Amino acid sequence: MPIDIITPHLLRDWPLPSATGDDKHDRGTVLVVGGSRYTPGGVLLAGLAALRAGAGRLQLAVTESTATALSIAVPEAKVLGLPETAEGSVSADLPRALLELAAGADAVALGPGLDNIDETQKILDLVLPATGPGTALVLDAYALGALSRRPEVLGTAKGGAVLTPNRTEAEHLLGRDLGDDLAVEAASLAARYGAAVTLHGHVADPEGHVWREESGAAGLGTSGSGDVLAGLVAGLLARGCEPAQAACWATYAHAVAGQRLAPRYGRTGYLAREIVDEVAYTIGTI
Image (cartoon, rainbow, N blue to C red; front, side, top):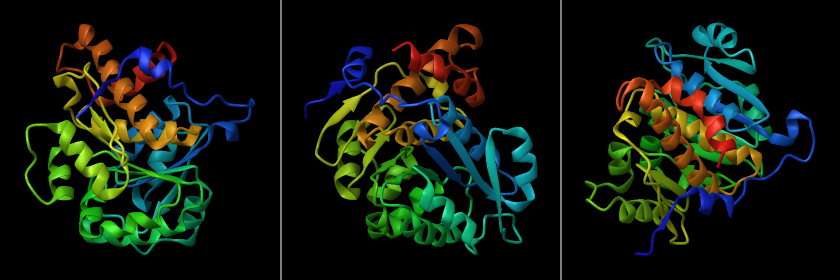
């Protein structure tokens, strides 16, 4: 299987869309839907990463009990509170306001911080058909588990999609254990779901193209790191990237941001929030 290595040279030959004006709308709107009473941080990390990737506007939808705190923590964002179950998960009894935000967003990231598979399945079934004709989709975490139950729901997404699974989520999506060749597995996922995929540094698209990022390190395996990657992809999609392009740029920026932190914190000592802080510089200096 031919594999292209993601390098600065490759990315410079595949440049990001340029904003045509100085208005925030020119760089696109990202909506992140996720969180729970106990895990609102996933939404925060994904949202900040989307802004650092260059998105112009950010909207966050989280449990009502955490919405006020999140709006203070991320003053750049519009924050919408969602109904929650007695256990503190986001409830699928979604307000019309959320579906309206999904219809108007350039990219929707669904999954960071969600923790109830049954509610997530219902949320997926409601949000995906509500997206606009040009809305791109990023599915992460529990949203991937829900997708594995009903793959056909992805067909209701109209603007393309990127899946950001870890190994366990990839196994759920494939319905089997992963093999040793992650490039082959990423390609299998992309073909099965008709979406771009980034899987532990391996990117694939439904047409059979495969890329590999070789700068990643053990430090990326830290709590919240996947939320950052999902947010990066969403931010780049909102700017106008095609799904495979967004996945390649985000995968590279995520890995190199971690590399930049290693001299200060060691190979495994940096935090996901610190990866976010390195992203804009990393993208800007490619």
